[in-house]
Length: 78
Image 1 (cartoon, rainbow, N blue to C red):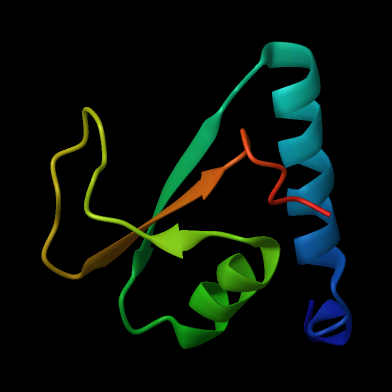
Image 2 (image 1 turned 90 degrees about the vertical axis):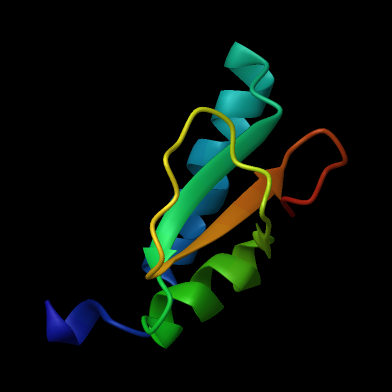
């Protein structure tokens, strides 16, 4: 929905779900893959705290994909 874009809803949902995963399931890292040209998504993930990484467990890497990690052990989520 175009009216819901750029309002921070996605970032807030990602922050809330990340906190829940860490608090209740003791998840320490969240990994994702995003197309390297999807600059809007990449900036959104960086806003939440994701960082670009080459260390992705158990995933076959694709050339057009940028891999990112959010480390929950050190309280990156506000």
